[in-house]
Image (tube, rainbow, N blue to C red):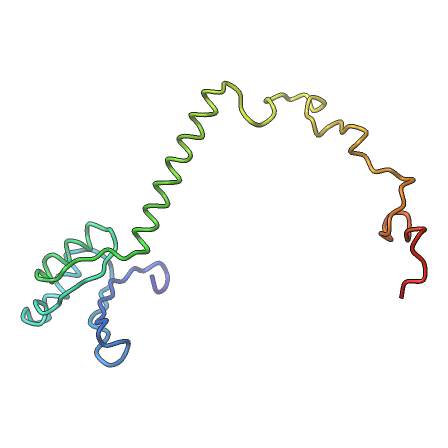
Length: 152
Protein backbone atom coordinates (compact mmCIF):
# COMPACT_ATOMS: atom_id res chain seq x y z
CA UNK A 1 0.00 0.00 0.00
CA UNK A 2 1.59 3.24 -1.07
CA UNK A 3 -1.25 5.65 -0.32
CA UNK A 4 -4.95 5.88 0.47
CA UNK A 5 -5.29 2.13 0.96
CA UNK A 6 -4.52 1.37 -2.68
CA UNK A 7 -2.60 -1.88 -3.14
CA UNK A 8 0.05 -2.38 -5.77
CA UNK A 9 1.90 -5.41 -7.05
CA UNK A 10 5.55 -4.49 -7.49
CA UNK A 11 7.91 -6.64 -9.53
CA UNK A 12 11.63 -5.95 -9.17
CA UNK A 13 14.89 -7.35 -10.47
CA UNK A 14 17.01 -8.23 -7.45
CA UNK A 15 20.11 -8.68 -9.59
CA UNK A 16 20.06 -4.96 -10.44
CA UNK A 17 20.71 -4.13 -6.74
CA UNK A 18 18.39 -1.12 -6.78
CA UNK A 19 20.12 0.49 -9.73
CA UNK A 20 18.98 0.90 -13.32
CA UNK A 21 16.45 -1.72 -14.51
CA UNK A 22 15.68 -2.88 -10.97
CA UNK A 23 12.01 -1.88 -11.26
CA UNK A 24 10.25 -4.23 -13.68
CA UNK A 25 6.57 -3.39 -13.12
CA UNK A 26 4.13 -1.67 -10.78
CA UNK A 27 0.55 -2.83 -11.24
CA UNK A 28 -2.40 -1.24 -9.45
CA UNK A 29 -4.12 -3.94 -7.39
CA UNK A 30 -3.39 -7.53 -6.55
CA UNK A 31 -5.95 -9.27 -8.76
CA UNK A 32 -4.11 -12.07 -10.54
CA UNK A 33 -5.80 -11.44 -13.91
CA UNK A 34 -4.80 -7.75 -13.91
CA UNK A 35 -1.21 -8.49 -12.89
CA UNK A 36 -0.89 -11.32 -15.42
CA UNK A 37 -2.22 -9.06 -18.17
CA UNK A 38 0.48 -6.48 -17.32
CA UNK A 39 3.31 -9.02 -17.02
CA UNK A 40 2.45 -10.74 -20.27
CA UNK A 41 3.41 -7.52 -22.04
CA UNK A 42 7.00 -8.53 -21.25
CA UNK A 43 8.51 -10.82 -23.90
CA UNK A 44 8.03 -14.49 -22.97
CA UNK A 45 11.75 -15.23 -23.59
CA UNK A 46 12.69 -12.70 -20.93
CA UNK A 47 10.09 -14.04 -18.50
CA UNK A 48 11.39 -17.60 -19.03
CA UNK A 49 14.90 -16.45 -18.02
CA UNK A 50 13.70 -15.62 -14.50
CA UNK A 51 15.31 -18.19 -12.21
CA UNK A 52 13.75 -17.44 -8.82
CA UNK A 53 10.83 -15.46 -7.42
CA UNK A 54 10.28 -14.44 -3.81
CA UNK A 55 6.60 -14.08 -2.93
CA UNK A 56 4.18 -14.09 -0.03
CA UNK A 57 1.77 -16.89 0.86
CA UNK A 58 -1.21 -15.64 -1.17
CA UNK A 59 -2.80 -17.93 -3.72
CA UNK A 60 -3.14 -14.97 -6.08
CA UNK A 61 0.60 -14.30 -6.10
CA UNK A 62 1.37 -17.99 -6.54
CA UNK A 63 -0.92 -18.10 -9.58
CA UNK A 64 0.71 -14.97 -11.04
CA UNK A 65 4.19 -16.46 -10.68
CA UNK A 66 3.17 -19.85 -12.04
CA UNK A 67 1.74 -18.39 -15.26
CA UNK A 68 3.93 -15.33 -15.82
CA UNK A 69 7.23 -16.99 -14.91
CA UNK A 70 6.70 -20.73 -15.55
CA UNK A 71 10.36 -21.76 -15.22
CA UNK A 72 11.10 -19.79 -12.06
CA UNK A 73 11.57 -21.41 -8.70
CA UNK A 74 9.07 -19.95 -6.19
CA UNK A 75 10.37 -19.10 -2.71
CA UNK A 76 8.21 -17.82 0.15
CA UNK A 77 9.85 -14.89 1.90
CA UNK A 78 10.94 -15.58 5.47
CA UNK A 79 8.88 -12.75 6.99
CA UNK A 80 5.62 -14.47 6.01
CA UNK A 81 6.89 -17.89 7.10
CA UNK A 82 7.94 -16.53 10.51
CA UNK A 83 4.66 -14.66 10.89
CA UNK A 84 2.63 -17.78 10.16
CA UNK A 85 4.75 -19.89 12.53
CA UNK A 86 4.38 -17.37 15.36
CA UNK A 87 0.61 -17.13 14.82
CA UNK A 88 0.35 -20.93 14.94
CA UNK A 89 2.40 -21.14 18.15
CA UNK A 90 0.24 -18.41 19.71
CA UNK A 91 -2.93 -20.26 18.75
CA UNK A 92 -1.67 -23.51 20.30
CA UNK A 93 -0.53 -21.65 23.43
CA UNK A 94 -3.98 -20.06 23.88
CA UNK A 95 -5.80 -23.37 23.35
CA UNK A 96 -3.60 -25.12 25.93
CA UNK A 97 -4.05 -22.26 28.39
CA UNK A 98 -7.84 -22.43 28.13
CA UNK A 99 -7.70 -26.22 28.45
CA UNK A 100 -5.70 -25.85 31.67
CA UNK A 101 -8.13 -23.25 33.04
CA UNK A 102 -11.13 -25.43 32.22
CA UNK A 103 -9.48 -28.54 33.69
CA UNK A 104 -8.66 -26.69 36.91
CA UNK A 105 -12.26 -25.68 37.34
CA UNK A 106 -11.41 -22.23 38.61
CA UNK A 107 -9.87 -19.20 36.91
CA UNK A 108 -6.60 -17.57 38.02
CA UNK A 109 -8.29 -14.23 38.65
CA UNK A 110 -10.71 -13.38 41.53
CA UNK A 111 -14.23 -14.71 41.28
CA UNK A 112 -16.78 -12.58 39.46
CA UNK A 113 -18.29 -11.02 42.55
CA UNK A 114 -19.89 -7.60 42.43
CA UNK A 115 -19.22 -7.11 46.15
CA UNK A 116 -16.12 -4.88 46.19
CA UNK A 117 -15.16 -5.86 49.73
CA UNK A 118 -14.58 -9.43 48.54
CA UNK A 119 -11.73 -8.21 46.36
CA UNK A 120 -8.29 -8.73 47.92
CA UNK A 121 -7.32 -5.19 46.85
CA UNK A 122 -10.33 -3.50 48.52
CA UNK A 123 -9.13 -3.99 52.09
CA UNK A 124 -5.34 -4.21 52.21
CA UNK A 125 -3.79 -5.81 55.25
CA UNK A 126 -1.97 -3.68 57.83
CA UNK A 127 1.38 -4.87 56.48
CA UNK A 128 0.62 -3.19 53.15
CA UNK A 129 -0.09 0.24 54.62
CA UNK A 130 2.66 2.87 54.88
CA UNK A 131 4.16 3.38 58.33
CA UNK A 132 4.18 7.09 59.17
CA UNK A 133 6.79 6.98 61.94
CA UNK A 134 9.34 5.15 59.77
CA UNK A 135 12.13 7.49 58.61
CA UNK A 136 12.47 7.94 54.90
CA UNK A 137 14.92 9.95 52.81
CA UNK A 138 12.21 10.93 50.35
CA UNK A 139 11.15 14.60 50.66
CA UNK A 140 7.61 13.47 49.91
CA UNK A 141 7.28 11.63 53.24
CA UNK A 142 9.14 12.44 56.44
CA UNK A 143 11.99 14.60 55.23
CA UNK A 144 15.63 13.50 55.25
CA UNK A 145 16.71 10.45 57.19
CA UNK A 146 17.75 11.47 60.73
CA UNK A 147 21.04 9.60 60.48
CA UNK A 148 22.02 11.42 57.28
CA UNK A 149 23.38 14.92 57.79
CA UNK A 150 25.50 17.33 55.85
CA UNK A 151 25.22 15.68 52.44
CA UNK A 152 26.18 18.02 49.64
